[in-house]
Structure formats: C-alpha cells, structure tokens
Image 1: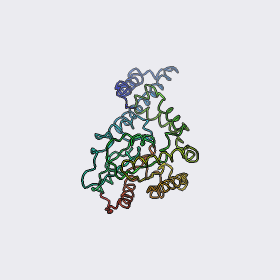
Image 2: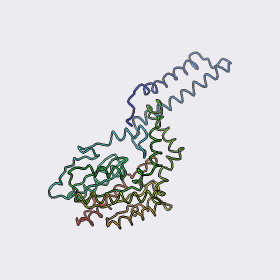
Image 3: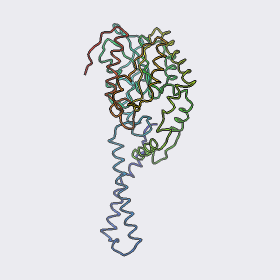
Image 4: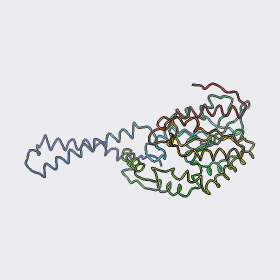
Amino acid sequence: MPPPSDPSLLLIILLAPLLFITAVYLFFFKRKLHRKANWSLLLQGNVLILLLLVSLVMATGEIYYRFIYDDTDSFALTNSTNRWILRHYKYNSSNYRDNQDYTEECPTGKSRITFIGDSFTAGHGVRDVNQRFANLVRKQHPEFDVQVLANNGWDTGHQLEMLTKLGDTDLQTVVLVYCLNDLSDIVPEYRQILDRIYAEEPGYLVYNSYFLNTLYYRWIAFADPDVKNFYQFTKKSYENETWKNQQQRLAAMQTLVQQRGGNLLVVTFPFIHALGNDYVYHDVHQQLDKHWQTLNVPHLDLYEIYKEYTPEQLRVNQYDAHPNEEAHAMAARAISKFLASQTGTPERPAKK
C-alpha cells in the first residue's frame, strides 16, 4: 500500500494547535470568561485546554512520524514502512532491489552466485543495500558475479515460479536463502490471517495520518493474537502433511536448478525474534538439515552463528524482526566461507 498523498489532513493537524491557542487566549486572557462563577464556563475552559494539549501531541506526533521517523515494521503495514520502502528500495533493470544491473550470461572470468530468497535476502529494514549480506559477499569476492533474485513476501511457491520463468539467464551456483516460514503459502491459516490483516480498511484518518496510522497498527500488533503470534503455526506445519508437500517443492527446486545447469546450495536463517535459550524451532532446523542431506544439497544453518545472541542485538527494531546490519555482516562472513568451501574459491578477509 503506497503512503498517503492527501495533504489536507496534515494541514488541519498543523493548524489545530493555532486554533486552540487562540481559543484559550480569548477565553482566559482576552475575555477572562473563566472568572465568572459558572460551571458551564469552567467546563468549557477545561475542554479547551484538553483539546489544545491533544492537538499539540497530534501535531508533534504527525511531524515526527511523517518527516523524521525512518524505520520499518515486519509486515510493512504502516505508512512509515511503505514510505521507507519507496525511499530505500532502488530497483535494477531486472526489477530486483540492487545497485547494479544483471546480465543473462555470466561475465568472462567470473563465476556466478545467484541468491534466491524473500525479504531477508532483499534486505528489508537495511537502509543501505551495500550492507545486506549478498552485497557484502560481492564486495568480499570480486571474482563472483552476484545476483539477488529476491522480493518481500516471497515463499517457496513464488521462488519456483520465478525459476520456471527465468528465461535464458545463466545459472551456476544457486543459493536458496531459506526462512522457516517459506512454506507459508501452502498453510491455510497463513493465507486467512494475511488476507484479513491486509483487507482491513483503516479509515480515512488512520490511512492519511502517519501518527494515527502508527498507533493503530502497533495496537493491532499488541492486541490481535493472530498478528502477535503470527508464526505460531510454523512449527506445527513441519509436523503434518504441509512438511511433506514442502519437501516435494524443495526437491523440485533442486531439479529446476540442475536442469538449467546450476548447483543448489542452501542457507537457512532462524527466526531472529525467537532467539534465546528457549528457541523452540530446533527440531525444524534439524528436519531441514536432514532433508538437504537426503538430497545431497550442501546446507549452512545460520542458527549456529546467531544462537549466542539476543533478538535485540540482531533484529532491525522492536517492531521488525528482520536481521539488522550486524546480522547481515555476520551472515556474509559465514556465507563467504561456505561458498569458498563449495566452489573451491580461496577465502578472502572481510572488507570493511
């Protein structure tokens, strides 16, 4: 959803404090109506002061979230996040977030590394695209021709469709950057919750005000159990028929890559928001690792490098559970070593 462009509400919000300051001045200083022993006038004076305070808070909040605040939420629900995406997502000629264009054929003297993923790979929450892990790998290994085929919201189904329609692009080493919720598109509960969240109309005031919009969706995130515990179905999905279907799709992805002459590698991100001693997705990571071993696909599990850290250290912010710049830097170092071991490329010291 694009951020609002109607300036009329902003004008009203900014003019309201001036209106109420004038009203308070006339009531208390010019007319001195508050001196008359009248409960009605006393109530009016108190209401005027309350409205002045509310208008000042509203104007301050609106200015801050519309012009100063520059951060994201996990689901890109708020006006601030959608403006952030417009500001920081620059797309190349292939319509992927990156600061260089891609070619169908790999440049001479280079080996191609193709990252496939979702918002973790696209770098949601990371302002400078050069600070996401794929670009850091590109910088560290100039001998790699790095492509990043990733978009926010992509699941395994979207990635399979993209590979099917890829055209004549040369594939060599393909790195599937897997997130535990990549099977979400075949989980009925996920679609129902997501459809409900995005289908709700917030109304004119919430849609057009950055401040009210932020308060509204933060309240939804706090009070709505479907949003608050959005990934509660993930663990269960790896224990039923959904996992069997996902195994088939992942095997199909390997086949597609091989048919195009590529070699599939996999990197798995943990749920950043769930890190800690009580991390409940250990079994899911083990299932995935066992599956990739069965397919003879090399697998790097980033949980091993993140497990000693807290969510606060590695997430974008308290409202966005995507990996921050530090988490991307850690991933880039681990992925560089992984690629070196799998492609026979000498390891290089990380560039700052």
